[in-house]
Image (cartoon, rainbow, N blue to C red; front, side, top):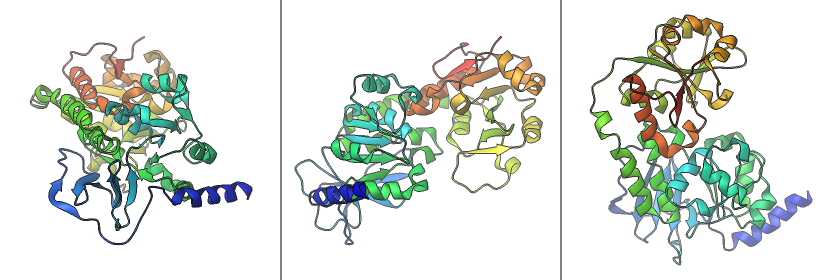
Amino acid sequence: MIKRLLYAGAAVILLAGCSAKKSSAPVRPVTGSGIMLDHAKQFTASRTEDGCTLVDINGDRYLIVPEDAEPPADTSGAVVIQQPVSCVYNAASSAMDLIDGAGALDRVAMTSTKYEDWCLDSVTSAMDSGDITYIGKYSAPDYEALLEGGCGLAIESTMIYHSPEVKEQIEALGIPVLVERSSYETDPLGRMEWIKLYGIIFGCEEQANRLYEEKTGQLNSILTDEKSGKRAAFFYINSTGGVVIRKPSDYVPEMMRMAGGEYIFSADDLGTDENALSTMTIQPEVFYEKAWDADFLIYNSDITGGIDSLSSLLEKYPVLGDFTAVQSGNIWCTEKNMFQQTTGAAEMIEELHSIFTGEAEDRMEFIYRLEG
C-alpha cells in the first residue's frame, strides 16, 4: 500500500509536466505528408500542421513532438512523446537492434531482458559498463528504478497485453508507453523497416534511413535470381515432443521464399489458426509426413538453445535419422542472434540463399551446419 501511494504521489508530480498527454480533438496531418514505407504494414507516420510526427501502430496513436516545441492543445487521444527522448526502458528485445542501428542505443537505460539472454555485443557491452540495467521482466519491472532513472519512454512488445496492469502503472507514473509490433510484419524487410520509426522517435532519421537502404540494397541480386526449387523445414521439438513450426505467413518462411527456396508447409496443410502467434505446434506424424523428404532441415535453437552436433540431436530425436536432409548432410541450426539481430534480415536471406544454392559455408553468422 505504501508503494502504491508513493507511485501515485509521484505520478501526480510527474503528470504536471509529463509527455503522456491526451485529449479528444483531432491532430491534423498535413495533406500528402505521409512518410514513405516500402514494406512495413504495422505502422504509418505523417507530419502534422504543428511540425510534429503522428505515428499510428495498429490503431494506437503517438505524437512525436520536436525538442523545444509545445504539443498542440488538442492531441486526439495520442500519447505524446516529447523529444529529446532519453532514459528509455526497452522491454521489446527485437527493437534493441533497430534502436542501435538508428544510432540511439545510448538513449536506452533499462531493459527487461537479462544479460545472459542477450546475443548483441553492443548491448552486453553497455550492460557491462552500467549504461543499460536489467530492472526485472516485462511483467514485473522495478517501478522505483523507472522513477529514479527519469524514464522518458517505455517500449513494450505486445506481451504487455498479458499484463495490462503493468502498462497502466507505468502510464500512471507519467511515462509514455509505446507498444511496438515489428514482429507482426510478415515481410522480413518490413520488420527491418521499423528502424525508420526509431529514427523518427530519437531524431536520427538520416542514419536510420541510410542503414535501411544499405541493407535492402544487398538483396538486389538475390531477389532477381530464379527459384532453386529446394524445399526446407524450419522447426524445433518442444519438451512434450510436439513439433513447433513457423506459420506459412510468418516472416521466416518469407525469408526462405525470398532466398529462392520453398517452405514445406502451406495454409492448406495446417488448417485455420487465427491466433496472433507466429508459431504453431503440430503432431510429429504431420511433421514427418511433410518433412521427411525435404531438401533441408533448419532447427530453430532460439527456444531450446544451440545444438552442438548432429549426433546429440539424433540421440534426442532418433527418427530424424531417416530424413533425406539428414542423410545428405543438409541439416542446419540457427544461432541465437537470428531473432534479436533485427537489422540482419538481409544477411539472413543471403545465408539461406547460399544454403539453397549449395554455396554455404559450414558456419555462418546466423546459421551453421550440424555435423558429427
